[in-house]
Length: 348
Image (cartoon, rainbow, N blue to C red; front, side, top):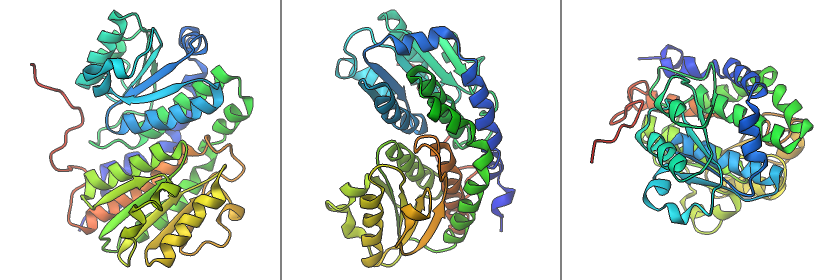
């Protein structure tokens, strides 16, 4: 049987710490044009597809709090099919694509520039159609990967964009804490060991909870679980889980809570309720105070860090759980069914 350590996807995920460090260096070199476009705008749109859309959700939530202005995350398809429901005026559009070749990303860059919107591409491939078609491009220099599903590309582009937001906002505390993220990688690795152990159980369903910026991270956990193992998975904001979805709690269901910072007490309490209803739970908090009184497995990631700075560390445990479940189910997560690395739409 294939072991997790034999997987290309896992090996690439395991190098995310180095990729994040390189991306933070790239953010320090971000051209003034990129910073000025974001600093001078009253409204910003961030867009992507699949994992890149969930990345956009996380960054948009942080940017709203940091910049104190409207920052909207929208799927690329909405900017193509229903742009009037997304755009207001000539606001800048940040386009995220690992490959820079996804059809929707290239189309959006072309249409936004034609309509007078400043475009900022974020990618792992500087020599790509998206990079060539955007006004300004930011590249995660060590984020590219050969695996089909995104791992270090997500974490590194997330770190890059958060660092850019910190620079635009003038938040020196967030910028400094982001610089500490690579040295905190052992905490992500320790949590990944918990994920590997939990992956050996035969789960009927997995639920991921995350509030604020972490809802984008929770959605990415759900996507990784779905595309690699096909286990039924859902992502919710923690308190929203009470409003109906909590009915899925029973033995055989795993509920993961990504908590930390504002609202942690209320959100951790929802994870406790899920445990009381029979679900197995795994809480990922920043420190022991945030996890106090929690039943089930607990992992501590990012104690003392700005809540946004720890976000890139939350992906590696997801990969351990998702890839491990896939192997336990007899799937090959290096070759997930029906998927390719880049989505290229056929000509109309």
